[in-house]
Length: 111
Figure: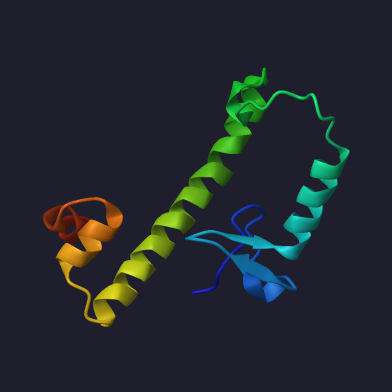
């Protein structure tokens, strides 16, 4: 399984650098884009969630697939980390506690 940039979906085999966070990744190209956006942003622009902007329906609909893909990637990464914890001898109680859920909920979700 390849790690993919959570922003542009490029696999680690197609980027120079992929920085890992907790279950997410960002490639060097997206970092450069972020830096240019941050440097060019006026200081007095209010921060609002992207879905709260006035957008046409077509643009909102076009965002659904990439958001869903990012969610799937995060869920896959979480399952891989849980699998790693189990392989290292972690109990369902420990995993549930780490996830803020019961042992039973962790087992039902990941077993």
